[in-house]
Image (cartoon, rainbow, N blue to C red; front, side, top):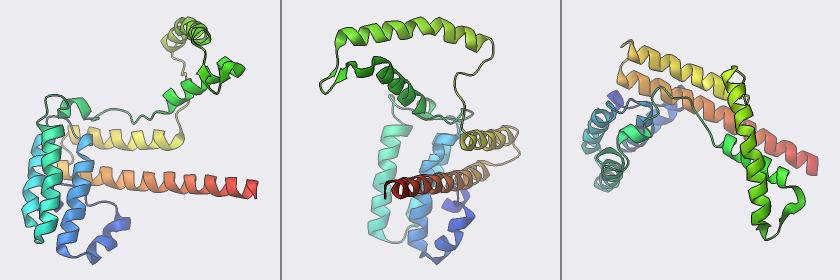
Length: 214
């Protein structure tokens, strides 16, 4: 059964799932299942994926079954059996959750450093080289700061809490205190709540912006 192999998502959605017919529920769970395979160790991913895929045949509606089979065929060819993108490449097991904020922040820093030199046509090449050279000089300083145990950035509370919960589950999983299905289920719960909080904050920020501009 698919329910034994992939997360059943958060308790917030359990009532919604109960109201779905059997076929729709299988589709929903199978889609959720592949989403969280990335949180498994790369050696566990092929087996978990194969178990999930075997549950596709339980979908009664032929059209829906064909649609999910195409999804799993794509996953298998592109991410499971691929020589270019095997599970070892994309598994994030025991790794901190990271975003592109650092890259975007560095880009903003460079843009501010260049100042009014940026025109509608972009940044002049010679000015860009000068800015990059000055930035490269700072590498030695950053290296020394890291060696002294100093942090170059502050991690947001929400991401810190997310990482603590994930590493707690991963440690329990490594010690065989929880099964693969339990790990995926609890990870799904964590991410559902995390995304709900993140969405709520984004919505509130947008509303505050609207109030300020009215």
